[in-house]
Amino acid sequence: MKALQWQGVNKLAVGQVPDPEIRNAGDVIVKVNRTVTCGSDLHLLGGYIPFMEKGDVLGHEFVGEVVETGSGVRNHRVGDRVVVSSFIACGHCYYCEQQLFSLCDNGNTNPAITETLWGQAPGGCFGYSHAMGGNPGSHAEYIRVPFADVGAFTVPDAVTDERALFASDSASTGWMGADLGGVKPGDVVAVWGAGAVGQMAARAAVLLGAERVIVIDRYENRLRQAEKFSGAETLNYERTEVEAELRERSGGRGPDVCIEAVGMEAHTPGAQFLYDQVKQQLRLQTDRPAAVRDAIHACRKGGSVFVLGVYAGFVDKFPLGALMNKGLTVRGAQMHGQRYIPMLLDRMASGELVTEHLATHTMPLDDAPTGYRMFKDKEDDCVRAVFLPN
Image 1 (cartoon, rainbow, N blue to C red):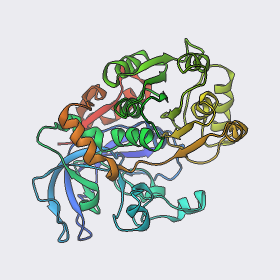
Image 2 (cartoon, rainbow, N blue to C red; image 1 turned 60 degrees about the vertical axis):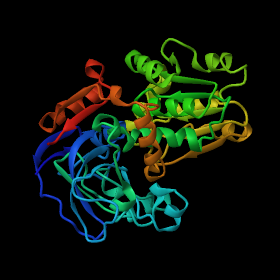
Image 3 (cartoon, one colour; image 1 turned 45 degrees about the vertical axis):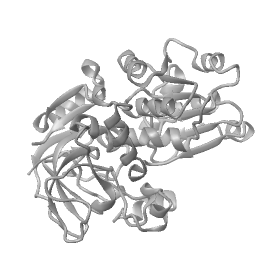
Image 4 (tube, helix red, strand yellow; image 1 turned 180 degrees about the vertical axis):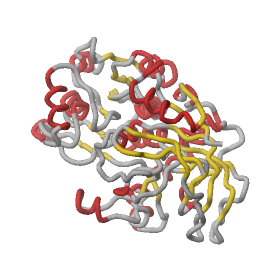
């Protein structure tokens, strides 16, 4: 079958790979209808997560049709239209029982790398390096889905593929940030990053009752989307002193909840960006933490910071003193999609949550290398590039 393969740092190509096969009784094979780029994929493309092998298939956010089921599958039949959580979870271990699905003990079949890096291994993820299990990704005509009764969800008839696609990861990740960040009615919430995840976090905060939601970015097209589709206020950090403006909009205190939706290649104006970039390129630090630093400094005393952006290892100049002395609660996680996707599909069906606007560029899988270039370089105001494998 046809698939998009990682060929080396900043090198992608569409090639032929073996068709997936049922391996375990709980597997299904899904014919991929739509699959979409993600900002975290750019870390793989750029070589910042050094556990890729030439020929690996990328992609972890997708919707499709079940074409084959294992003998133990109970919730799905051939012909079902499904959206699949990007993180793979068994549904039965201690962490799954706590609804911490991305921490599943059984979803990552190659835990040694992350146990060495982080002390313990998270769950597995589609198309996200051998540190996360080495699972073939969704930028392909077909994909094997393990633990399908746990991680695949039937899409309601009222929800189109274009809308359901983003329940797979972006909407689930964004909602998790607002939920586990503790957003409650009356809060002032600030979100760093107006990509798909940041917009979804902002929309979740609005629906959870926040009084004001403010999204921070430098790309005007993304900020306009956040205003129109999330109901948020916006700030362009290249034109505004963000911390002062956030205090002005929050009674002088700072936001109650700050959500970081940028990740390890964060941009910031001024010399600090060059400092971080040089250290990252020389591998003196693995990640650029500018957005996390800004969130910690801006957050009100006693407030909450949630880190949604993907980070791999170690950072410099982390403001631990501010975190401790301001009494902040800081959390982070990979997405617990199985926890949120059914609710998100219901909200999509009712019209409360729309996502189609995120898919600014749709193209055949053959054009995926071009789509990634447009996505990375923000060409033609690209927010997300969607690929059609079939």
